[in-house]
Length: 142
Image (cartoon, rainbow, N blue to C red; front, side):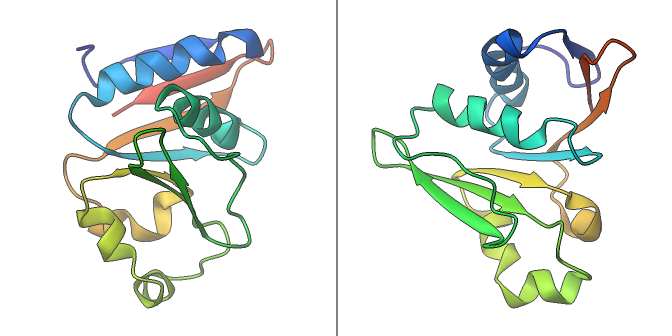
């Protein structure tokens, strides 16, 4: 397993699949991964690639309006994709049952996790994505 404190650079969209493999290697047994970054930084694109690596059978889309999407792997295991962009405060997150997703054993990928940072479990893999000077994506793992 790769250590958590490192950077991964995706220089081209064709390298996203390999980055997805690396992210899963970093996660090891951890199933909760939180992605931070500006609009357009690639959070959803990377999560789509990870879901493909996990064998998600459904089409992976951004849950910007639904807040939570559930996908099933070919083995029937659920994978959750949460987008908190429209959530204004932690109480709204509690209203849709965020604690169930955070305490489960299924993979759970969270975009815009800042609003719930104080309740994220310690084992959460945190990834901050920035866009580099040559349009590459720089992923910093914590």
